Length: 318
Image (cartoon, rainbow, N blue to C red; front, side):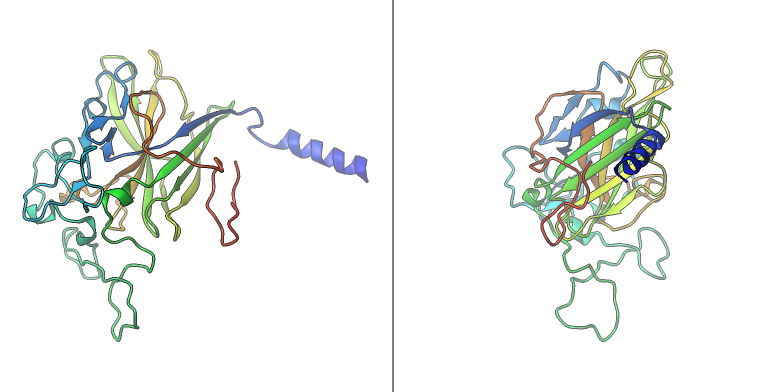
């Protein structure tokens, strides 16, 4: 029996794919936008993506709420962490050059933005969901789930931490695992690969694609934890070098505070709801850049992928 079990085990190991995978481990950075935290750049991509202006300058997607102002405040180290996170148009010039965003959506606490509801006529026609009711509604209306953080502060935003691992396989594919802890509870997150076509050439151009294909979404648990595995049809850890067809610069963990998805784009740019209005990068994973900042939050022990179950044990280990 023992020999039989050993033989079966050997067969199983021999048949298992991707045994010789190389692993890359990346700690995430909580972010206030694309490659920015506290008004500064998180990582330098100039050596691998010199023409990518989107990565060179702080591209702010969330600010803090200033009552009565036309624009939200820029979060810096001096900002009070008790301020409410708010929408911003700082990043609109890149994604929405026509700048047709409704001013009423700017400098709003993110819980005030709302979501499309039944019978809406345009993507800008939004209902702000009620809080989870203490008593049953007589008439059903859109409402947020019980654990949702409707109006988070800067401090709430900055509790998140993340881990990403990339297993690069011999056939050119990769398996990517992402865990975010202490994010927003019962929230919609999507994951995006931002990189370069034809890197380090005159034809270099930026791409943003859903990580692992569509759907690239996950919902965090009541503790704000989300963990997800992606099978990627290319090696996410491939080098940015001359002669490469493409390379990945970063993975973005994008928080949709309107609770909606927009297909193969993070936001509804086509309908004048760009990034910064209905969602933002919350967790930034630097693949090919040089870190200029240490992560504001560390991925604490146990440093493995997974979320706590009710017995305080992890249900996934990688």
